[in-house]
Length: 440
Image (tube, rainbow, N blue to C red; front, side, top):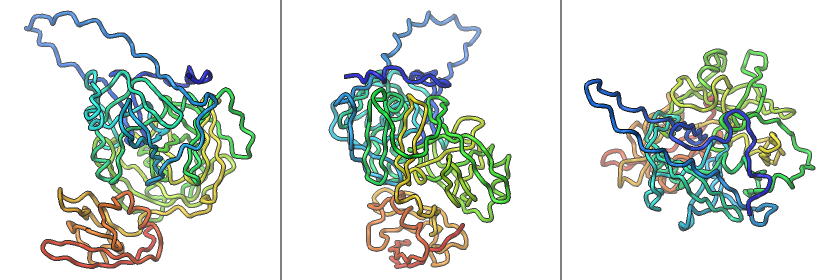
């Protein structure tokens, strides 16, 4: 039955908006806004158009059912590239991979999956993602099913196949604010389990750090202190984004205002892919991030240099992602406007960036390889003789496409490790080894 405490999400900012063509949807995985499609201009010499049809009734508000009523516990998930992948279903589909994304302002079905399931989109809109603008659709009624959890209501359809190719991991749907605002969610990153609990009956008696939440477009923000090298701590607001695999992402206005790119001693180039296309940033190491009484030393941060795309609300500092969150059990308690962090054994691990200097993308069709798109200067891969355009067939004897780009990222974040690449260069097949070292 419907969890009695979850009928109405808390009303902060524009929380609780519906996914109509004039509404906005923000996702952390894709930093995405759904925008109204502009109407074509009217020719003054043409007769006026016929009256517009009566608009359809507003869609039914999202509904959440928990079984048992107190909540579903110990739902297993896969943690891949710091993203939370849950086994579930969309309507009456077979088992699918659904990502839990606190940076998502609504439910999303991958457009190709929606086509396969016969979901009918009610008109088109535009989605502005981290990398630009793409077409998006809207379905008025979709049911997402997780173990003990049924969530029904409107859903966006977004093309995500490029990101699937990049990660080599299926991403069939996303659930976020629509679920989290109607319950208490306990994410045990160490045990890889999720609890979805009834908010009215939830009482916290642990010893974690309790952080107040505020909301922008229904998404959760905390106030934290960030220390940039050579500067006093800066207080600001960050969106909490389980859909980001990174540690920190700082907005371009914040980076430019505080000259962060000049303050960090060294940066490397990073490129990624979100909804709308490729995203380029600099990566640098900061002094500290403080969340209440928790101090995280020497975090790495992606420094956005361009305003293209959206990672957090205007006037905020940026985005705290899965590479930091995975060091805790995270409890989202939207109804009581708080987040609770309980440290796990990973808290003391250093935060690292890429140590290979490889910039990869999926290889050509049927190549069964990853292509070297670009190389970081003076980094191990370039120094070992890797060239742009090389096709990497395997890494340490494992097929590169099986590992995927997202799967290789954590492998190349350990200092002093030697890796063997099998490379195809034209008609040649080469074996190249390199040893990683810190670049920042």
